Length: 284
Image 1 (spheres, one colour):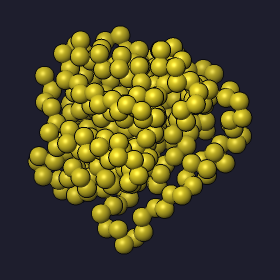
Image 2 (cartoon, helix red, strand yellow):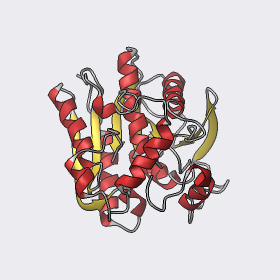
Image 3 (cartoon, helix red, strand yellow):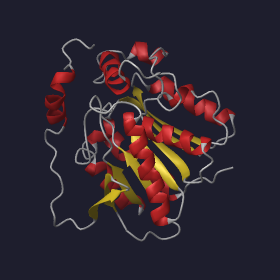
Image 4 (cartoon, rainbow, N blue to C red):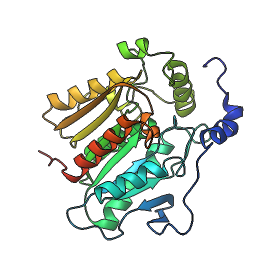
């Protein structure tokens, strides 16, 4: 466990700290609405009747499968919807350690299938950090079940490999906000003592076959211990003929999109993301 990092009994305090400074939108903000996606709470941004050319994005927030919620990621989801014209569905999945793998993955996939049925079109699965893990796992699951519900995957500095053995996991293990010790703790909370961490639905980067997957956009921070596992995932997709766009931001740290409004790099990254959303590559 990470030195000085809260244990499972302190999860409530950790979650409270993750929401410091977050101010949820008031009722006057009519561009969002809360619904249930086959029992899973979701918050929807953007048009309820998107045009045939605008995407539907199903988004999973980060936070190590333990922290964060709809409120902490409201600003990012709102910006994605506003700048791209997309309908963004943010998913309030069950969190660890109360609900371990595969609870979060199951909830997110339920929301994906619900959105596909509601709007009658394949959706873009998206997420940051551990949310990117859930998005990539959903893409694998849809492929394995031969379900046409996913058009593309938008992965923002995603968690993809439990082993943390890449060069970047060593180089940026400490001193860059998100540490390897913290990441190991998150994995412990998510998986518990019984789950197999190597199963592709837990570690999508370890999937032995990435053929017939949806196109991907990988937005990565250079000074991030997760950088190389995401690059490896992108290369594996490309080897299978999957369209992949990788945007790597030099000098940036894990979670830098939280600096939207302050960091020019975060502004550029969100603009690149929304440009990709408005020009989605077609599946092969």
